[in-house]
Image 1: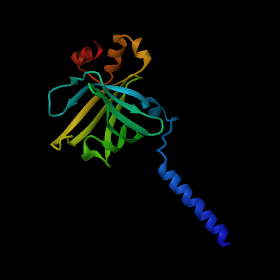
Image 2: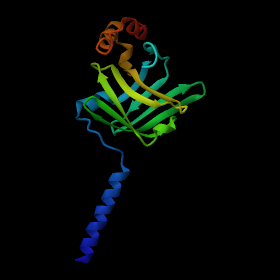
Image 3: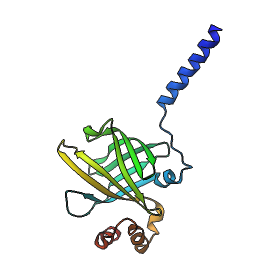
Image 4: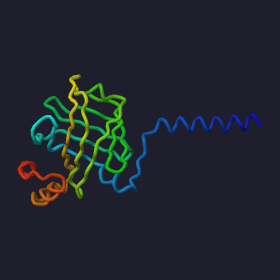
Length: 181
């Protein structure tokens, strides 16, 4: 009897620790999760303490994996660097990044809740609050980001189609024109 109890206790402990060590699983059967999985490039950013959106030069990316992980990285003259990584949760219009590593050390070990809005397939809007920047300076501002999916078919999409999708997120025709030129 003691042997059987010890055996099941051991199985339970091994199962518990195996579950703790695995990546968070997300459900790809959830259409919302399926829509965000992939490689995204940031196209424009607006900080609430500044005027308007700024179109961002190419080279800043977000990779969202189907196993519940994400990674932001950028290309530089010296090569690519990972700026933040961790796991994510998606519930309704709230996309939460659970940050493991970040160039902004004040974010590590914390959750970063972001409001998310999607267009049909090509654009993602993220809005989040930035209390402190990567230099330790208090900001207390909202940051809005427009991300575009990176895929081969983007080479085939006309600027008219892209403008129509962006109008689902923005009402600034000048910004839409800059992003689709």
